[in-house]
Amino acid sequence: MYNKKITVLNKLKKNDSQTNADEWLKTFLDTAEYSVKKMASVSGTTVSMGQTFVILIPFDDLYKPYDEWKNGTVGYTMSTGDLVVLGEHIPDTPSASNITAIKNSYKGRICDVRIVNESPRRQGIVRLKIEGV
Image (tube, rainbow, N blue to C red; front, side, top):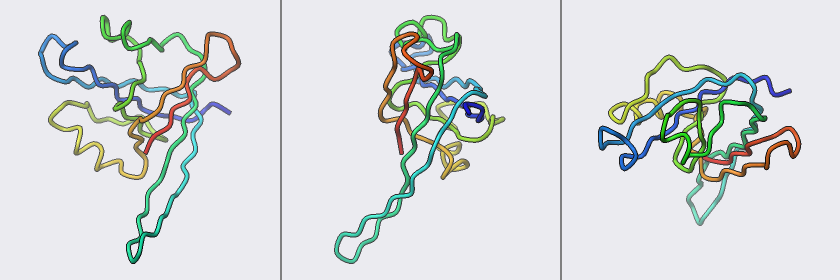
């Protein structure tokens, strides 16, 4: 348990960046667990298909809250709008110009983070519970 690979793609917001543009940074983790749930809904004659993700990351020394992380960008953070690629360490170097291509390349295995729940230090094994689409 907690031995699955993920790639975390963090967005450094342009207001916090020295380049005054959004920057993307990646971090590899080998200690996550995740599940994917297929969803379908019907409205009249329209059928919509999709999936939701739940990702669990245990305590480690790499995680920093965004306000700490943005000042040094060492390790990783987790915020709404970040991305997580499931099952592998991707070779791509993310940037503002290729982030859409990365999303398309890993479709079905990439989570757009919508909800982040952080556990207080040492309140169990799981530090972060991430949910997204």
